[in-house]
Length: 359
Picture 1 (tube, helix red, strand yellow):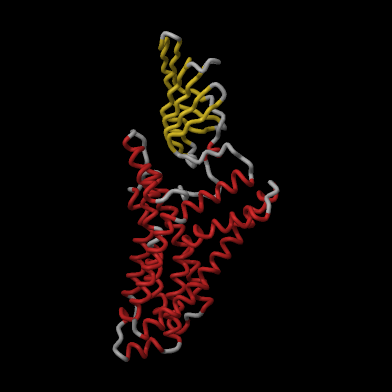
Picture 2 (picture 1 turned 135 degrees about the horizontal axis):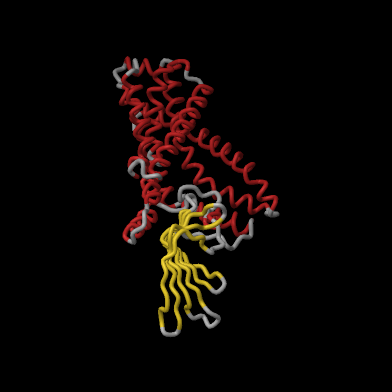
């Protein structure tokens, strides 16, 4: 590694580390004020606060790492330009690619580390944080932590659910097995799809069967029915977890493959599966985007401008990403395009800025 590379990396790592810590702290502060009422209401102990918010740090770091990369690149190159070091490097015959290569490689390294964390660290931490919040703080043992092939005992009934989409308020492949006092099967209702509307589960049609000791005695096809099922979408939804945050890429791919093979639409899981790869690589995209911004601002690239620019670009990125994912969930965009759309758009934006850069 050359002296210039070490100099650039030392400056980048310093800014990146401070920015990452600051963004994580701000995120935790906002999250704390959002949840502190619930913790106080349920009389949570101090260790509940500490464990819950500590377990949220890997997830938060994954979200804010792209902003820290953007700020690190912007401030590093901006500092070189402000002190005429960039001009001196150009005069010595050092190309822009040679100057920025260590920063881009570091952005790639951050993306790869984020990718590994998204697969092996974040899901486990999110699951444990949800357990703390739901069971230890709220004392709610009824929260369902699975998304498919769920079995529930409800009095004298056994309920089987093939797929839960809590955010959409839908149950797919719902079967209700009715038992008598001797635990013998006396009835079964098969509901392909139930939607939670007006505080009740409703279905377009269901198949109802009755049994006795001799076997099947009656079978009926019923339309526009309300399903007798007391759980709500909130009982399947994990507070603090969004877009299957407690599942890694391999788990999502396995689940999506199985659901498609069983005839169910796994579109939400496929979108989230591709997002597991696209989101960590946004750090590299942001590192690339920070280069033309620093070159354009030149000597005026101060800390205040860098922070403001990073926050604005970060907010814009997350808005575009959320919109693209929403289109993916609704099948308006293919899952892979929905997950990668924000990265591609901001990468093209960075290329356009490079073409208009004077340096």
